[in-house]
Image 1 (cartoon, rainbow, N blue to C red):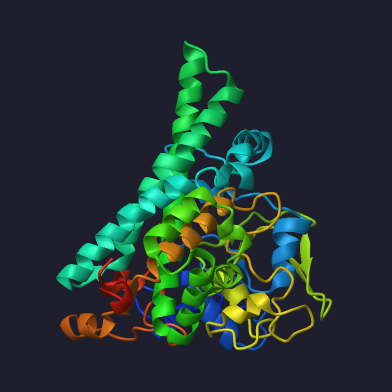
Image 2 (tube, rainbow, N blue to C red):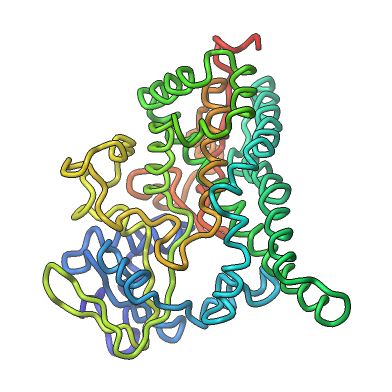
Amino acid sequence: MPMPPWGPFLGNIPALAALNKRVPNDARQAESFALLSSESPGLESCFYVDVWPFGFPILVITSPELAMQTCQTHDLGKPDALSPFIAPTAGGSSFFDSNGTEWKRSRELFHHAFSMKASMEHVPQIIEEAEAYVDILREHAEKQDIFLLDQATCNCVMDIVGNVALHSQVHHGSSHRRVHEGKAGSAIKAWATIQIRLFLFVGHDSTAVTIVYCLYLLSKHPAILDKVRVEHDKVFGTDLASGTELLKQRPKLINRLLPYTTAVVKETLRLYPPANGLRQGLPNVSLRNPQTGQTFPTEGFAPWVLHSGVHRNAHHWPDPHSFIPDRWLAPPGHPLHPPAGGWRPFEHGPRDCIGQNIALLDAKTTLVMTVREFDFHDQYAEWDRLHPPRGPNTMFGERAYLIQKGSGHPAQGIPCKVARRESVGDL
């Protein structure tokens, strides 16, 4: 079976310790495993990891085919080992870490609130919160100070999730549950509170990180930024204020007429997926490599669909570490066309992310309202001058690597300066 170098007493721990010395000490483990997979012949599609007694055995999955088998063909459930990490934040078992009837009932109750139709109804409220975010950016542009882009964005998105998504969730969930007084009503309220905490934790984190990395990557690729701005001007006009009003009146423009902006968001999520997918192996369930025919038993292991590994797999993605939004506009048969099942930031199958519609709408709306008015410039050079790094400080050649902070977040929060573009400086 494929795995890193193994010994009878310490398993894979020495090999993983050697790997950790080559990456930043705060880098997310998922990125380290993605690097290991990309550099190690024989580990390109999956590999087993034995870290006993410090953790449970896992089967790391880095190929689209095996990921599809895990989450779609077999639809493996969530492992018991996940609950100790999620339950303290949510306050109990939620539909994120539950299985069976409990999970299915919870999913059905919230499904309508997160449909595309329901999500589109909230674009005007998303715009209002994004306007507050723009005001904050204007203040930083006026002061010309260094601030943490991740922190500022998280604060804004938390308001959006709290004021838009959760209101809808509670409304729809409560109407189906027929909230009554007494013990039953108290139990339902406690159940709803757990789900709300989960949505706040997962929803605001992943959405904010997507926005932050979009702004960061566009700042590093001015030609791509110019194409995004041209697309926005074409749809909304060059006057920013009237463009915002048009968006409020016709929110469907976000989905219908912004293909390149959508491509930027999807390519950002390919390079910087905020989460991964952990499942529970079962007896008599094995994954099969369609190219080689080799099978990989899952019993006794937690299959870990490593989104960074799948998204950066050079066997499926040309130039996998480069920011190329045009992948998402390439027709089938083109070398850049994304592989089937190869893009998984929200996962696929019955347990895909229920909030992905709102997350994508939020990201695209925020880009429409920011990228034409502001120029962003990361201040990592100044940060590193004041805080000299000890050891490596890049992953895949990138300074803004992912660290584990709830979901994945950019290292040091992306210290940043923002300036207003000259063409809109008097607005």
